[in-house]
Length: 342
Image (tube, rainbow, N blue to C red; front, side):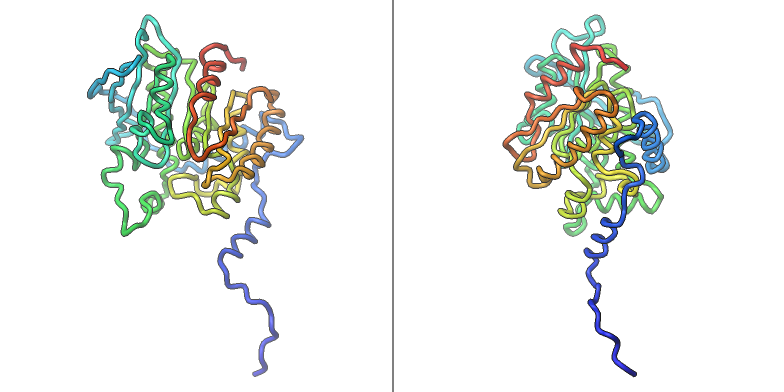
């Protein structure tokens, strides 16, 4: 038998992924010249399909557990239901002087990886932003996502393996995914806020850092109720943070999403509502150049939506953290003070 002709062997799996990325274009990526409204509706429909089976809607039946007096607000721990046999613990912060007779705008505050809702009322990379918004006069709801905070009791690390990935695989056995369930819970949190007598139902903003920014993006991309959105430490591209850096997990994406859209396209579905992107130049998990590249694409979408003035950016000298001042001013402008046009 003659020897085979020499050639370059292609063994590396990473090279296979590289070729896959080089050859593919997301089917619903925004392109100049597309009509914004039709493009957004088509992408929303495609993303909704990726959510897969969702729980049955249910009365949230909120129950207050305990109250703590804060500086300028009252913090209540409450539990609400999002599906049969699924209870979600959350912190509700109500500013002093706010009640059913004197309602206020609200913020749905979304945590990322870490300790859950407790991170949003503590020092650290979140800079206690739930407390800061409450002190500014906003009613704030901060729920635990699936697998985090008090919902992380069984969120075990399997011999050092990431619990997010294990939970993703478990749900995949049933044709479900954990990002969709987190989104479902956040949608029900919006329902809860809208029903609170001390909240002005049409003035609810959403803000989150990291995985919380991912949650804020998907929530506002698929639901029109958030009046304004802050996404901190997340705007990037799938190529940069997932394929190149591997900085993602089973909790943070919808299976098949990159086949239809990249990260800035999903953000674009929030238009024409106000959106603040916050990015640290030294964020080691989310490359600043990728964030700038994604922002340029996103700006084109906001221009096509006729709302270039509603996309803002707070780029700062720092790392993976939520700096509070720009988001506070942003929400004051777009949620507290201004009635939004359609």
